[in-house]
Length: 445
Image 1 (cartoon, rainbow, N blue to C red):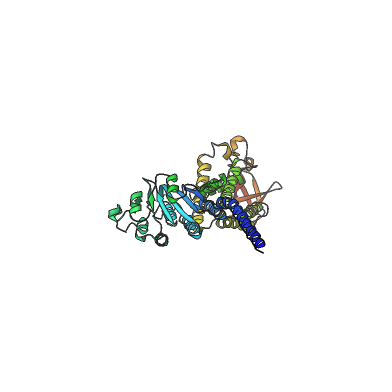
Image 2: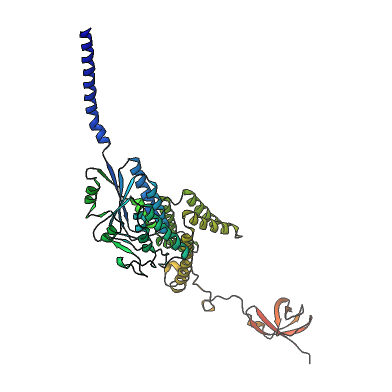
């Protein structure tokens, strides 16, 4: 029995050794599988809806890869408030650790985006702040928009555990912080040192490598997410300044094409501009194909108006085109301003080109009727019958002052000098001016 028991013990020990050996083989793979992955995503140039679409893709990729953190390489002068708001929600909505690496400047919307991350690090000489809200003309926005932005900046600071007074001073020039160089009438802009002192930065690092070392990610797998060509193009095409330019070229080109024979350069330029407008909004995720279909339907109805007059088809088509622009944008105010700018610019440019350059440019010679049928060229609208002067006839109708007379069996439409002449009265033709033949009553002696 003792021998059998010893055999069983030895068998159990051998089994444990084999299991431990297998575990040792498995552990390296498990360690590799748990290797830290860090994503680095750039936030550069102007903040607009195209950037939001790019960041949504980057965050989704990082979440699917179970990344340890996302480092946003920030260098932006700011941009659209609505786009910044969407980016802020995106950053606070992810469960991944988010870090803003201010690599030069994080101004205006850039400051707001940075405040929505878990940690902020800055390079020497970098700045963050100056977050006044302005409209497309560069003027300070209205009270309602300012109130929203002040609250958004304050909320972003509070949510990240930072003193909100500095975020408010970045957006409100009435807040007095002279020790930081932000007296009344001047927005707060923090340097890297100042940001660290007031708790708006966790530290100052020279470069990204130093930041990775500081965070303990020196051995992590670094995955850089860069914008594709389509995303870069979409960001450019959805820029608040570019949109009215595209709409202006589109509307002006199509108007000129309608008044010129065939399909030429104006139509190609106009159609290309409008297609680029919709392409940018499609790639940025702001519009769907239904907007393109609605636009195409509107253009079709406008063209149909040339064959079926009445105005109804053209009016519906115009409304459909305008509606497609609004549906493609999630900011009705900005789109309305862009459309007004485009329409005004198109009208002014049309008048300018037709009146100033119309007779000099071959393109407008096809649009403007420059030929005239003058008498010098042998053209006459009506034959001037000078041979009738002095001829007498009988009125077939009363002249009040116009009517008809009979001259040698020929009926002629005439007018009197102004006085009433009754029927069956003898008259004499005293003047002929084209189709206007003047008669006078012949008085009996």
